[in-house]
Picture 1 (cartoon, rainbow, N blue to C red):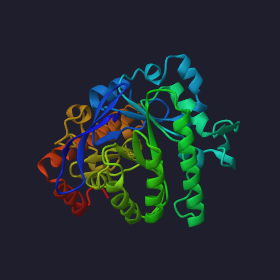
Picture 2 (picture 1 turned 120 degrees about the vertical axis):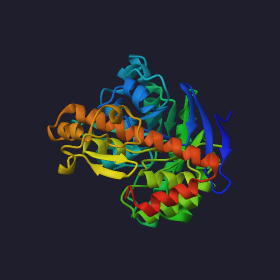
Picture 3 (picture 1 turned 120 degrees about the horizontal axis):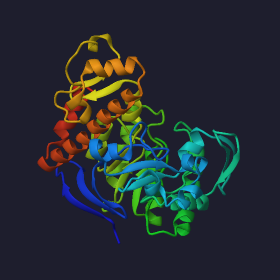
Length: 369
């Protein structure tokens, strides 16, 4: 059974509006998923996400939750939803990127990856079977296959090895799956279009509930990322959800939607919020700047978020300069609400056939560069 239905299409591009059915609810796409790495979107409660951000789905991380507090403990306590008091869908990434970027690798083989924890240096082995076991202990609605992540500028030989390993691991992940929860495949291949298309064919031949583009927004030039999105997005299986992992800016997201992508996650809005960089309809601002010291006005007069409806730029600057914890919460609510609102605008433009015009405005105005 296909859990994804396409409701509307933009005849002038590959953009579409869909419904993705999961065990914990139906998600309307295109959708942005706030990153809740450690079973929390930093500084926000699950109630904040529901009441003030209007999030329909969040992302958590397999590697981090395995390391601390452990997937077995979360399973014992009733699963990730109960653990964090979140009743809506959760996607867990496979941990492949975190093993690559955070842990101290000790050995990589066709069996899996041996690594040392970034917390205490303890030794661990991630195999495709183990990654599936962890995600099923967490009981995430959407699980990701274990993929072999390598540097984007790796040689073609190394890219092919990583692709083959990811394909083999994808087959094992599918075979190891025990739950009825969804499982997405991941397409690798660096910034090489022909390798990406080859791997797309390999992963779709296995057959999954959805498909993701991995290995982008990891240091490659922006034009290279756009080239891959433009080439691969429209060729991914049409009647399945398409997920672009770890991307990105408002401009990146709208560009990807134009090319048929449905799902996104990125730490950008939450990390920027904690650093005082806030998204508004007039572009990004840094709230610590002196010019906001006495501004008795909201961050964004067009914004309906809890922060903009109740607090001034002057107060938000005061909180940030004073290093008050409340600064993180109010800034994060605003930035995530901005992204939620962006996705609503994207859907409206798809319905009216004006998404290309909206993208051109964002691109030419350079509001979010």
